[in-house]
Amino acid sequence: MAEVGLTSKPGLLPWCATKPPGWSQLFLGSACEGNFTGMIAKKRQRGQKSQKKPSHVGPLDGSWQERLADVVTPLWRLSYEDQLKVKFEAQKKILRRLESYLQKLNGVNVTTSAPRAEGLACLLHPIIPSPVINGYRNKSTFSVNRGPDGNPKTVGYYLGTWRDRSIVCVRSNHLKNIPEKHNQVAQYYEVFLRQSPMEPCLLFHEGGYWRELIVRTNSRGHTMAIITFHPQELRQEELSVQKEAVKKFFTSGPGAVCDLTSLYFQESTMVRCSHQQSPYQLLFGEPHLYEDLLGLKIRISPDAFFQINTAGAEVLYRTVGELSGVNSNTILLDICCGTGVIGLSLAQYASQVLGIELVEQAVQDARWTAAFNGITNCEFHSGRAEKILSQLLKSKEDGQFIVAVVNPARAGLHYQVVQAIRNCRAIRTLIFVSCKPHGETTRNIIELCCPPDSAKKLLGEPFVLRKAVPVDLFPHTLHCELVLLLTR
Image (cartoon, rainbow, N blue to C red; front, side, top):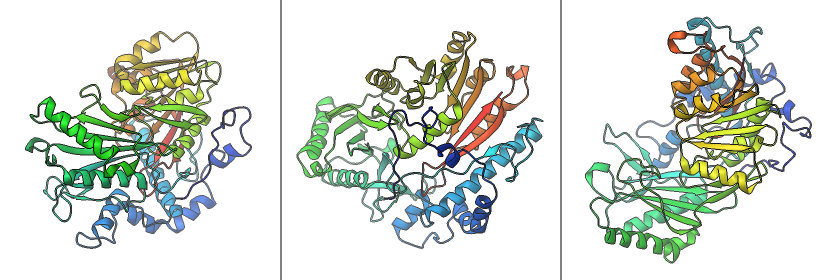
């Protein structure tokens, strides 16, 4: 595991008065120009091939493990240096396309400065690498289905498509992004399934019981496992037998070697169930995981969103803090805040922090974290942002400037959230964090930056895209977090 140390002591964050010299210059001080871009161009061809589709593995070539690695971690054959070059070029293309939309479709001048060397109007900074390259995931979801040998009680990741009925479940031991502990728990879950008289649920509406496994870990090695079970027509007494069986397996049976900190069980009557729809049942252990991040102790519930790369999350949140420019005269509005880490880490610099999150358990985590760390200027609201945001902003427009941070899921922001942000004059700075900066994010940015449009109820002054900072949280994959600074 390649790893670089990260400072998380209070008072050493990059945006505070005592920030380490050179941090901003290293990460945010200069645009990607000259030698860096030239260096990328020299080895770009090899990276581009891997980005589009691996050419080295055909449908019948390579082992099952290699084929799975090419799907889940398509850049795994490249050195990490070359992976970063591939990702940088991809982010540059996305930004070029975005600026083209803004200029041609909407007649927007995206910035007042002249185009830069990259052919972009906004300032694109060098990609910030992940401090951890291998085994970085703190959450993994394993499926249950037929393996290459036909055994329906195989735990791993899918190859193939449902449409072609070619699904094969392949064990994940070889995937570079999954830690050994996650693979160990998956391996023993498979052992349990193969000794259980209950059939697995391969297709949701075709019977069977045992379903997927989620494994979450923290930097201290504490491990939470969540098992999803389709109850079908089982009575509560029969369900209790199965819960006791899996509990015994992981506490005093062969699975005890996994040393789980907690084991949850969910009776899932739908393909996807939230905690509100079907509560997670704690079979044994601690109800939460705790993580040390940016000088804070963070509480994490089983279904709460938390960035899957903990060390990379520190870098990401520091970057957001650097770009946000929050101070004692600003309110920080954190939309889609998850467990509230961004707002909580910046609370000491802002006059107030307002967080909005859909998952109630995550909001409870954020409130616990604030109380435990003695943070008193944070409010966290549970519910859909499109239902809450407008009224919340009306109550806060008292002359103070608002810095908004949005970190939506891949589906992007709801249109009403975009409207509320555009129409709130107090929001002068917006940080948009996206792991999928094309698709719906592109639509969001266009709506935020287009000229006022009364028909669409976009009445406020448009934002201008100023800076873009790619942060790699997902080594070996094509994914990357892109942090965008928009101001008006």
